[in-house]
Length: 295
Image (cartoon, rainbow, N blue to C red; front, side, top):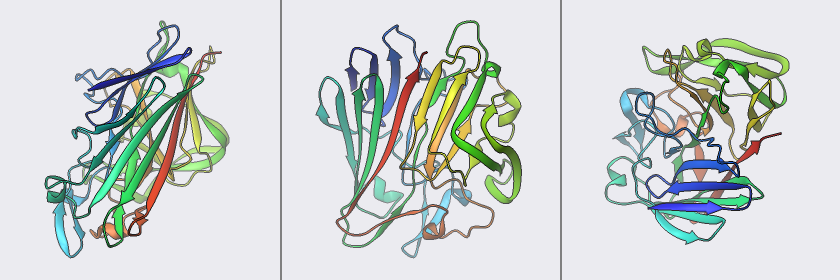
């Protein structure tokens, strides 16, 4: 089921399959979301739960058992119930099922709400613990943005502009062993807010920042000032990704709580980096927003 939200400045379309944002356009009709060309990537904004990235050999230990959890979890193909729908807002929800308990032992309720306010799109992820015990999970967002966003431009015309000055390095993903290595880092910024985009940036897969001050980043055409700003106050880390070495015309901004396995981690799920903990009967919310920058 497709749900359309609109105000005078923007239109958003969300699919109940995966509660995935399919389209976000300004009033002039410019599309900012990647349109799922399978030549490069058949998704556009998947919800990552209860795992972000991959476990070692796609297996993890939890509650004394070994569980096989697919990369990025099981929400991407799940049909969410539409629990609320209005002109400028909608909410989507799934609960645990017999199928989810093949991969993950806990009972839960997971919702994702979208609200358009003055042309900006606000998302709230909420996890509810319906168990009588503490649950553990990871959660991530994965929106892909067209890049370039304007005719005649190229990806190399764009910068990632962070909210605050950063001195940061990215942790390299070992594509052979399918893990992040905390001992292998590349310096990216020194007292700067601007990281220029180029294809070689993604030669080791995602560019992952696990220790940054900013909770917002923009993809901006340095020649025109146009682009998008992604704010992620509910998330502790962020990664950026575009397929390499292809000429994929998009870049993903991926706020994460959790990530693919670290080389230094064991296989116990509760030991994962940035794992989230939720006590019985409690709920936790995570915010994310997208603002169009067109001036």
